Amino acid sequence: MPLPRTLGELKSSEYHEARVRRSSVKDEMRRNLIARLEGNEAVFPGIVGFDDSVIPQIVNALLSRHNFILLGLRGQAKSRILRELVNLLDEAMPTIEGCEINDNPYQPLCKACRLMIEARGDQTPISFVPRANRYVEKLATPDVTIADLIGDLDPIKAARGGHLLADELPIHYGLLPRANLGRFASNERRDLASEVQVGLCNIRQEGDVRDGG
Ligand SMILES: [Zn+2]
Image (cartoon, rainbow, N blue to C red; front, side):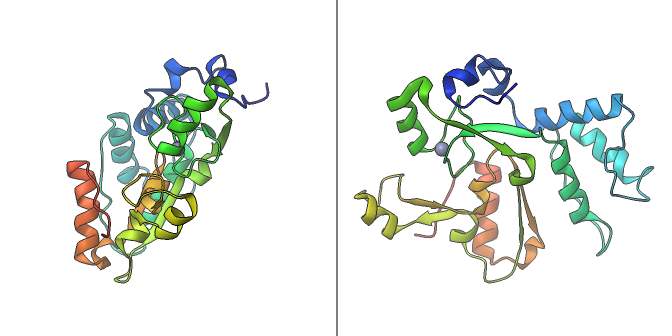
């Protein structure tokens, strides 16, 4: 069956509102992991030697929808495991076409999408994001800024669109919001400037965002 191309088609497809609206990344990975375990498939086919120690713990964490930290020495496949986790996401995820942060069509966060749904309703165009595009990885170095990772107001975008700087539309999204409904990995986080580490911790613990300005 061809994939739905508008919000109206999406609503009457297998990606109906009851399934997509509340589905979290953790639920999605858990569902796909269970399917793999039931089919006796390898969970991480590219990882060798961790079948009895690391992998069962990761499986338990994913089944319990837990957050987890991978600690280990260089070369112990931490980054490899992060990249393999992407294969537990759905093959394709519906989003509003052109959205920079892969918005859930039933619960869009960005103002551009909210305005689009208001204006076009069921005719709002939908596109599908392949799972490989839902993984964002950033190797941390001391010169990484808040604007790179989280985002900043873009005065040029504001001027071009005739928006006020205090508006939401001229935001330039950083890597983290672009990984919305996907996975974001920051490798070697201790190398980030402390301001940036605080910004990331703030999002995770308090759920609020500070930009550069
Ligand atoms: Zn959006």
